[in-house]
Length: 207
Length: 207
Image (cartoon, rainbow over all chains, first blue to last red; front, side):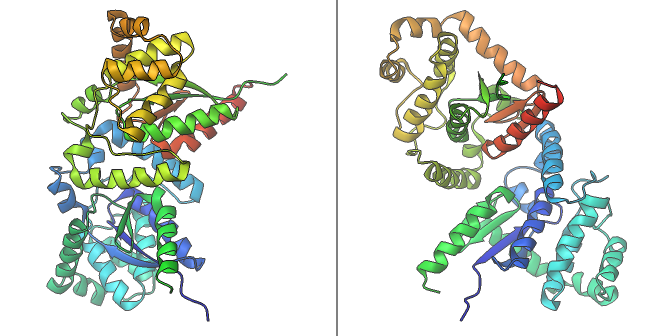
């Protein structure tokens, strides 16, 4: 009997540039059957606010921000991902995160995530508002009206707040972050470490 | 006729944890004849101060700091590098940076760098002061007294200040940083990108 592949939690904010790259990488791992990915959307805003930042550190620290866009271009080029510097950065990610939560319940959430990142960072489509989201949902053959109502509900918003609170409680300070068990890994560059850790843990657990 | 390998500038602060890992990685690249490394010590303090930080961000942001030590442990384990969390972090790196500059002129600077990092982060030896440095220099068969006098001179200190100013002028915002030509790469994880860029540039330049 084949055992399921190891489990990695993927914590992301749809406004986070490096999470775009990570979303492509985790999707590939899962497609290849090398990992199961638990998608956990959260908001970086409160995490950054707790560190005293009222904006993205890439805006607050211009040298770091300039570098980030150049670095991101190289990472996207390596993976064949489109990249176009968006007109607005960071975009408000509350509504698309709530759409993600609705979609994860309904089975199309994972496809939505990569598609939302590609729209936002590959084609500069405004995914913060209902218009952009409607277009994307239609592209995924998902009827948008009911989803947008659900995404705006208090219940879904509360789940997003709970995810964000859980992230902070578990030591998340940026995105993308991964967990293998309770061990945190930060940044796209550490997905390989997370996978190795999850695989070892599975062996130790005798699964 | 064999052409020399591509040139990468390695910008580091002896107080920087990730620069320890990078120092091992660049030394290996050079040992294997895959790159020539231009060692450029500088001080992170003024760089961080310009970003509004009066301490290491790993101290200012505890969640990030806790993670860094765990991440560093994995990176050191992969490379077989010793690691022991130092009693003082960050250590003052002015004097060891000046010793490095003296050593680069005298031909033992590169050996000193890896040895200083290993002492500081592998064995918690205080490399900020003359006692620790004396011990290390003796270990490298370098007569310490003249070096320590030279390292404390205004001329060497001025060179360190110039390096730091140059780093900031060229967009350096952290350490380790690498340059391939005028292109900046930040972090140990980007050494491969720097090497690729330096190699391409060499081909384009027809060298």
